[in-house]
Length: 224
Image 1: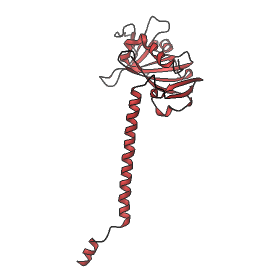
Image 2 (image 1 turned 90 degrees about the vertical axis):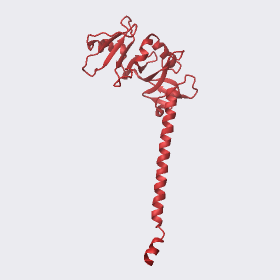
Image 3 (image 1 turned 45 degrees about the vertical axis):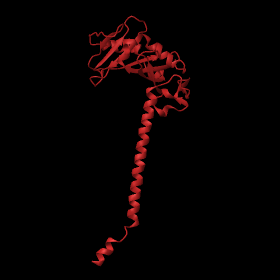
Image 4 (image 1 turned 135 degrees about the vertical axis):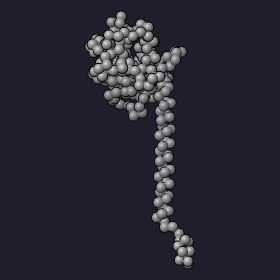
């Protein structure tokens, strides 16, 4: 009985205590890292959601031989916010800054050699993939669904049939029933840079002012 009492009062080994403290330290570190990621994600989301034309935090980049001066709040990816040469720049801007409903547009700037404009694809590719149906719904644009083959399932091309250099956008239906289709439009800018625009189909009714608004964003930074 004396032996049992002595065993009960024997202090725990130091190694056990050290192990517990180490475990607590690791847990605290993991919580701190997790909190940092949450804060970083929230900060990035807040920054991306509101690209500011007046942002004075300028990042100087060179793309395809052109010097660009891009406000920090426009970047979609933090790792691209480094001065120097770049092969691709991913930005986010907003339509409807002049009183309309703001709509986000993802803009990817890259060399012309890595992209083909949508107007060229209309005649070279899309025209041969139309399924014969014609859609309405966007004033001034013709909607032509693409054949359910060759990787074009669920896609529709909207274009201005009257212009020599038409507005063209290829849109893919969302897998979510209530979400709008997502559209792509590629253009060559006079600077020698190509721009790929990704936006919701809800922006299509304003197609006549689309390129004008894009110029208002891209010309001041040297991309247009």
